Image 1 (tube, rainbow, N blue to C red):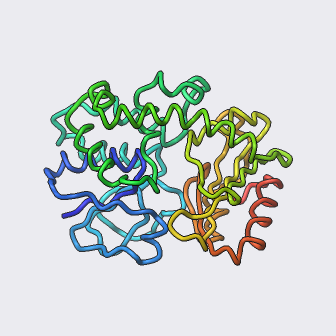
Image 2 (cartoon, one colour):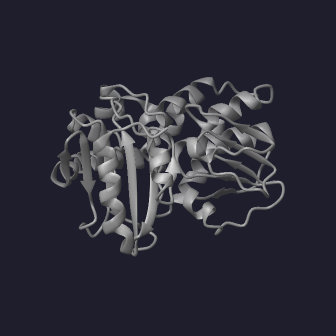
Length: 297
């Protein structure tokens, strides 16, 4: 029995909870949604998939993404919810020796972007928020770090996790990185009506940083669209779209919108990847839909 999940903070916490609830010791399989959807991941009978699209070979599935809904019977839980970890915690609530309620509550808030302006501008004051920012795909040596976090979070409280040397170093780097990211966001983001468009395609390396920061920098925007070259394949364009967490007036279900372009996600946050030959067609269409701001449900 293997845990197959996504390398983000919700995925990390899903792995922590599943390992304890089911007494699992094997390695976690870290997978991006698009990789699973393209059939590039071998799923075995007995596998538990969490925070990812459904695969018919898995034995259990836990997910909360709007566009991943299926209409068949399966083992596990699907429900629109703040986090997949919260669904797992509820499903296996009688199997935990430790009290994970604080961890799950924090994961719910982080994954659903239910954050205050101060948490966005000063994440170093909020342990779980800062820790979540050290987890991102494309990280060199990321898999070793993600596995380490699963072990640490499953055994220690948040302060002890933050004090671990590797984690502490990454947290300090996140704080430095966020300062640089603020400058790059301001230089590479334009406002069209109520859409903030961040275009990093011309940069030799896509910068990483606080994904919520753009909403504080462009308070008149309802939604942000970030465009970049895919780290794994330079012939692919990656697009991320998110509703502003401070100006919630976007009427577009961005998960449904990007499903039309090979992606998907939540109502308020979604992503897609497509070949650069389609960029001149797809990007203006996505921009137009977001600027028009009509409900598509």
